[in-house]
Structures are given as C-alpha cells and as structure tokens.
Image 1 (cartoon, rainbow, N blue to C red):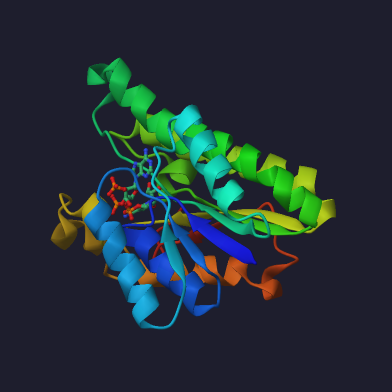
Image 2: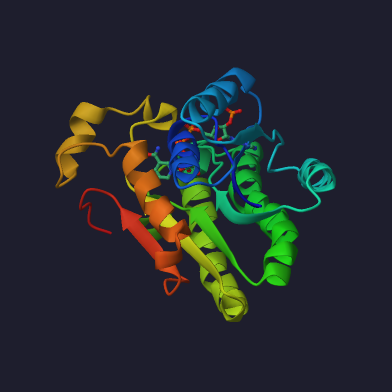
Length: 242
Ligand code: NAP
C-alpha cells in the first residue's frame, strides 16, 4: 500500500494536509515532535471519516530518531512504502540578526533543512525502487523574498527551495516529483503572535490564508494530475508581491 507521511502533521498546515491526503485515499502517517493529543485528534478525525491514519512521532531534526522511526515502521509494514512525503515541520525563532543567538540559528536550520535532508534521503531509496513518488517541501514567502527578523528562517527556507530544484532534476527520470510550496501569512499557531489586523492590509486579498487552502495545493501536487510539475516553488500568499 502507498502511504503518505506528513511531518508536523499534528497542527496547523500539516494537520490540514493530513486530512486532505486521507480524503484522497492515502493512509496517512502523522508525524509530530511533542504534542501527542493534537496528533491523536487528527487521527480520530481521519478515522471518523473512514480514512486510515497512524501516529509516527520523531524529531525531524534528529537523524537517529528519524532513522529509527522509519526503520521500525518499515519492519512493521513489509509490503508498504511511503509514496508521498510532505516535509512540513518547521519552527520560527525570530529576532534581528544582531541579537540572534547560536541556538536560534541552529534550531531553525536543524528543523527545516537538516530535517528535510535526513528524512528525504532515507525515503528516496524506496521511491526510486518503486519508480514513483511525490516530495513536497513547505517553504515560505520568507525563503523567496527574505523577511527582516527572520534571517535564520529565510536562510533555511531559501535553502530548502534550492534543494527542491536540485533534487527534482536528480529523480525526475524515475517519476518522482519534488516541489516546494511557499505560503505567505497563514492563520495557525505559528502566526498567532502576529498583528493580523495590521498585516492583512499589506496583503492584496486582505486576509490571512487558511491551512485548508495550502492543503488543497499540496493535495494537487501529490496527485497523478501533477506528474509534469517538478522543481517548482509555488507561492500561495493572497497576492503578496514576491
Ligand atoms: P505550527 O502550527 O506551529 O505547527 C508546527 C508543526 O510542526 C507541529 O505539528 C509541530 O509538532 C511540528 N514540529 C515542529 N518541530 C518539529 C520537529 N523538530 N520534529 C517534528 N515535528 C515538528 O506551524 P504551521 O504554521 O502549520 O507551519 C507549518 C509549516 O509551514 C512550517 O514549515 C512553516 O515554516 C511553514 N509556513 C507557515 C506559514 C504560516 O503563516 N503559518 C507561512 C509560511 C510557511 P508539535 O506540536 O509536536 O511540536
């Protein structure tokens, strides 16, 4: 059976992506780091709709945790493979660069960029063997435009876009597509501390986006219909100039 794995699937955009992919018929692996109740809620929701979901907790920033979780899942699922990977887990540690601590830089890079590397490299082997797969990386407007106060986050997301474009060319011949999605401001826990009333005036659509709108784009990129789209960074930002 072909599974979909969504990192950071317990909340926000990842949660909406899990629900979308389950509705498309994929059994979904919900990854998270710490908040099990939130992940359980997503699993229950999917199962209530007749879908299939499993929890697969690990810290994407840890190579050993990632390897161990995937190894164990593979041992329990000898006839299955992960055909859709959504590298969505991400964190913000915003501050002006002059005040930025080593750990602010390191943790953001570790989660977004190293997380992408450890997990994608591991799952690519099976995708190459099965000659098919979808890899969708959650980038950001910050990775395209750069945003002040987010030198770490912008660097991590820009690097993720570069990696997306390079990997796409490596694996296109094996029917694996690799794309990035670059959301602008989306209403989730991550943006809860932002001044939405002021910020939305900068956005031509005059509102923050919803996780479901991002999930719809991810769902399309995961579908068979998107087989000829690869190596792209697709913005979803209500018209914010990038
Ligand atoms: P969110 O609501 O803060 O949720 C983050 C999710 O990532 C949670 O499920 C969290 O799990 C998980 N996570 C964080 N660190 C992890 C780690 N080391 N290992 C495994 N899971 C981890 O964030 P969101 O707004 O949905 O953002 C999702 C993605 O979209 C991120 O990559 C973010 O950078 C990107 N993005 C968001 C926006 C926006 O406006 N919201 C805009 C552009 C891009 P726990 O709950 O267990 O910690």
